[in-house]
Image 1: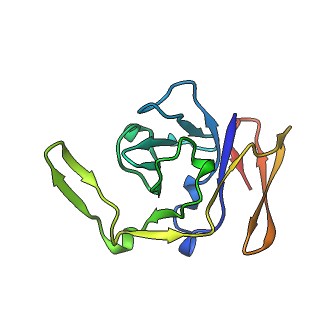
Image 2 (image 1 turned 180 degrees about the vertical axis):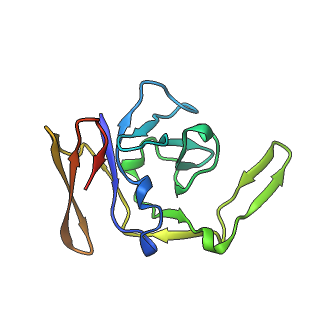
Length: 153
């Protein structure tokens, strides 16, 4: 099974962290976890605290990431909450806690209301299209898969 995290982000921030995510067999913090199909650097999606996070594989299971959804729902595609993206131009916001340093939602996060998480994107052969609705219009994301299994386009 797979899901797709697609749509516009403010100033196209972090668009390289979006796309089709493949479900992993392993649960993380009791929730499903996913790997970005196009990732050459190990981008993953998991739940920690009360958020879904898209982040580096090295941070798997932690309450941090580049793209975030503040929702305790069992599956990210079931949420109706607005996704947020990390805006590095606003500066980092670390909060020291007894358990260590932790990223917190605050002025460094920007809403991405056009970002959607979709269940069951259609994939066939070397080409696939993801259809989604944004601002009342149907949008299409065309993606081509190379022989190496990476995606581009």
